[in-house]
Image (tube, rainbow, N blue to C red):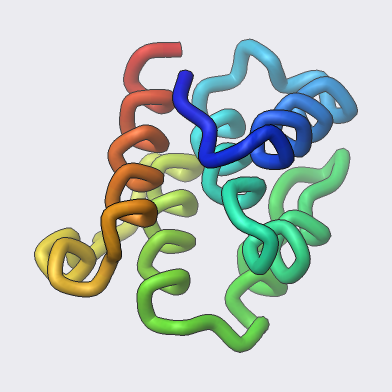
Length: 111
């Protein structure tokens, strides 16, 4: 699995170990996005707990359009529902965020 940096890998593993979700591909895909970058960790990952992911609180934060779309992708991969505008993401995301989206999809598919 590809990680942006060591902090991403560390925070990703910490979340699923703390919550016991190592075999849950829906959680892993969401955790992958929520731990990828400092802003996502600081503003999004704090709404993950034993009861799940509070998406309403995650989306109540101030996000750029690129991050918001990544989070919608994570929510869709987590809940297996919802529509996202992937073509908009292709126009919006830089290379790092595009790779993050692709990896999250692969995590959800292959775990």
